[in-house]
Length: 304
Image 1 (cartoon, one colour):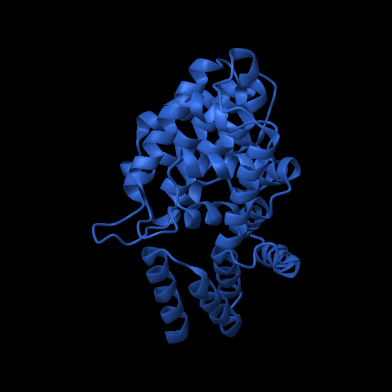
Image 2 (cartoon, rainbow, N blue to C red; image 1 turned 135 degrees about the horizontal axis):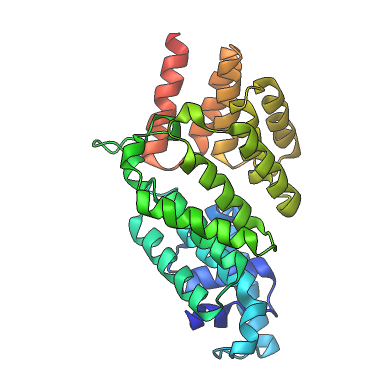
């Protein structure tokens, strides 16, 4: 664990230190890290080269930081562990779910909590991971096909992880220093607290995503907010939000942007445009299970 703190040296740019740590200690490939940052492989490799050059030129020591140095490196460490978990939970590679990465990321966040007890964002990240991972067993059917959230058998969700995750995020929020991981955990807790998909409080989730976007400015968060707005009943407004992201161009290579747009267009009976967006998503999607789902959606659309 302290080796991850070692690599997250504050002299490096935030994205560089996270990418370097994922490469040297996380065991992720260049393709996996590039997907995590939504950049091309060549761009990611250039960042790694520059980071290594800066370490050499600046004589940055490779040593385990002392206790007083840990807090300033915490943000980078949490970002590394979040991305390791995310690669395990929603891998873009051959396997949609990599349980080994999820379990290891959770274990490491628990270690961070022991090193720096009472940090709200550590608690928030642990809560987020537990709540997300609670759904792992329900995400694939016996044939390995992807089951979307609304169609999952909620009796297969891990109740113990949901209880622990919910308690952790409530504890973190009571500390009064709300951060992005706590907000994401709160969103996951709303999903986990819904007995059925129809019971999901999408208006609350949309509001939480608006809060999260104000904190991060992330276009992926803006996309997730659009999905929540659509589920809350405003599909036309959600489409306008996604079209703004398309015009902005920051998520051009992100297949889920085109998936969301296709779904909104399908629900608005704009089938020709929906088919084009599904095709755009298929051209970008790598994971076989996701590709098969998109192919089924496209076939159903053409048949209808």
